[in-house]
Image (cartoon, rainbow, N blue to C red):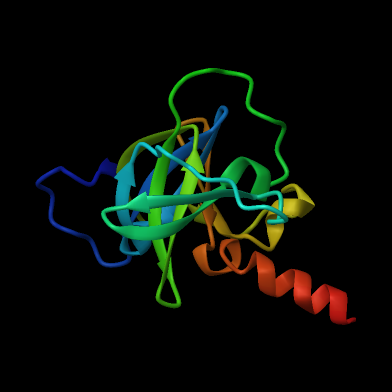
Length: 162
């Protein structure tokens, strides 16, 4: 069952709302309860020696926010277009992050009937960052695990300690 979240239909038990974002032609979903802002990133200041997925720091309503490129985080090819990028404001552990994406779509209310576990053939670089997928009218919506997505520094320290 797929419906836009702005419809007047009553919420069915077992449905969840997702903000859809795009990196290239790939559609990803973020749980709406994790999304605080949607904005156009401006004035990003690079951070020397930062991991490659950190684009830099930016000012969001007086707060210093770490800008993270979803494309780089998912090890996808560099962006080729010149269009404006968008950012999704997320919070983790009291810190605010701006997730830089190519575009933001609609909010979808999805039920368990379209949900599937992480496919075995999903790119290995994405498996630990996803919670599952939804099959929607010939498209695949990859649901991202925001906690895992923003825990990139912890993963590096753990790998370095081994």
